[in-house]
Image 1 (tube, rainbow, N blue to C red):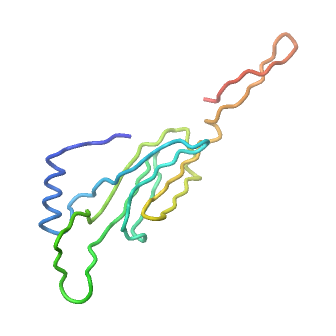
Image 2: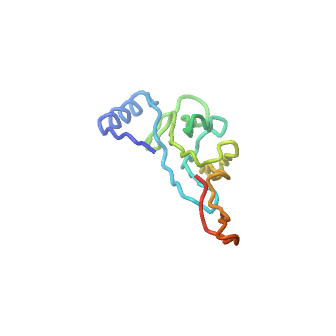
Length: 146
């Protein structure tokens, strides 16, 4: 996974969000990634986003997640915010995926403000036992496919 960090751009983007009410560039989203048995799991914090705006794509060993959180007007008339600390606008995150994943069986679920993407390990990348012949007899040696 490659991340770029530019504090000047971040502050300029924050200023644009405060002045114009929306961000010019997609913002990153907080995430956790871990392995759970035969799956890799990535959890993205996306509270308050429009579930219809969620888009998860896997293409050319890249996982792309996009979402949007819009400002919500309260009641009738023009809204006058007293404080706006929650980021609004477009959110996007891209992860480079290894070759040992089964991209055909990726699943995603959005519950309680968390998008969970499950990436199964490909069958060809799982460790397996290989029988090795030895002087007419056989013994089993641990190995892995590559």
